Amino acid sequence: MNESPTRRLSIGEWSVDPATNDLARGNERIHLEPKVMDLLLALARHANQVMSREELLAQVWSGVVVGDDVITQAIIKLRKALGDTSREPEYIQTIPKRGYRLIAGVEWIDAGPPATPAPSKPGYSRRHVYWIAGALAVGVAALAVLLGPRLRSTQTPALSAEAISASQIDAVPKVVVVPFKEIAGDPQQSLLARGFTARLITDVGRFPDVRVIVLSPQSQETQDPARFGRASYIVTGDVQRGADKIRLYVRLVDAATGEALWSEQYDRPYSDLLALQDELTQQVLVKLRVKVSDAEMRRRARPYTRNLEAYEYFLRAQAALLVREKSSNERARGFYSKALERDPSFARAQAGLALTYAADRRNNWTVDGEAALARASDLANGALQLDPESPEIHFAVAYVSMERGRLGEALDDLRVALRLNPSYADAYALMAGIQTYAGRPDETIPLIGAATRLAPDAGYLYYLILGRAQFFLDDLDSAALSLRQAVERNHEDVESHLYLAATLAQAGKREAAGWEMEEIRALQPGFDVRTWLKNYPLADAGLRERLLKTLDTLTR
Image 1 (cartoon, rainbow, N blue to C red):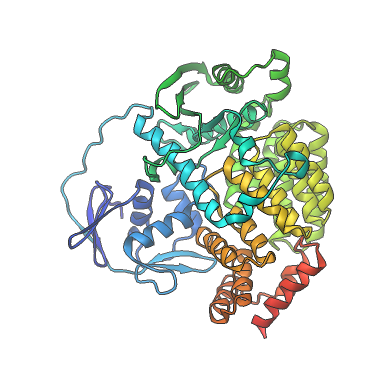
Image 2: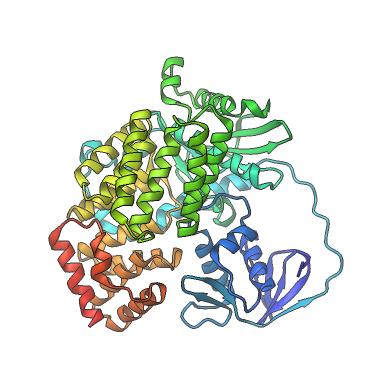
């Protein structure tokens, strides 16, 4: 069924107008974000059929690199708009381990010929700038509420205590890098746009005179323009590729006024792609008035690879790795391997390959988890020998060390990663999680606070890390709030459900805790807490015993 994007339909009690992205029911009218409407239409075209997350990614976010919880967040927004719930659904049903199904009645209504969309010019209006700035305030505010007074009262002396305070982040100019957009909507161009974004974030983030703040692709469409954020500058860009050429539009905007401070259009042969990425970083640093010598620039802005084909496979691997499902993990491994076939010295690709093996062991996707972990360790350490100055490789080595139970070594590598890139939010987040595993949940709070200020669009992992620490600190009300946020953003993550169940049990809410355990069994039939804990890196014996005893009371 190939429905026109402007063809109206009814779903249950709602009238749906895809042309305007509106829902109507009586006098009630609700406007949806474009991607949320696209998701609703995809489900409607397959009404009463289960659609997997991969199918929805392919249809709604085709070729666009998004985080692993983008579908979950869109489902949450869609249910809220429809007045639906996950526990007693009347519209959208979650099928554990399989996907989602639209269960309400669907009727397509003829509405004349499709409207011809007006051509659009690349660029961001002042309204978009305020949306982007608002995203920072909203994202930080959401986690600030959950972080609570512990974060505000914690004294954290710089990096020696493994964290930077909010005042230290705010003491230097902050540049927001909005994910670059592809102009033509082609999947290959989406990967290129992601590549430009990632390089700029990584390269600029290595300089201590600025802090790079990262937004998700959806931020500027969802936030209240009146909410002003903490950004000093905003960088946006658009990418277009022809048969053998590439065109790049870049803009630097003053976040407070919306004034364009600099804009540039680059037209280059496609073969110059990697050199263009280097040039872009240099130009942005110049416009930000960051003083850096040519030698320092060359040292810090190290190339991923000079093999264009290897780089393209690397981008495809990175996109697949983000989905965090077994099949996508296997695809990522194949793409990383192809990148390494074309450039055996491509250290970032080798580090990514290591993470796929670590994921196999962490998620029980392989029969021999220890062999997978040994393979991950060999690959990660080999990548470090190829490029010891890459913060991302130190992150990969730290992650593998954490999985091996070597928490001290993992923290050491994360300190190096943060020295190389002080804006590395995920390094702060991983360090935060390790502190809890090591029995120091109080040190997790300021670390996750620093991560959140650098990446306000926190995914489910940030909320899980925070809620896990709050549980062990006996801040059960805050833990329940944080962990519910994690579950809402990724309903299929067993660990989030598990800690929420433990939190609710500790708070005396056994019925709600039991329901969470039922959700886990639906996701993983035959789930056993002790088997799960066998590979879990919670090294502190006291915390481990407490978690086990709490969960044991729910499985008797």
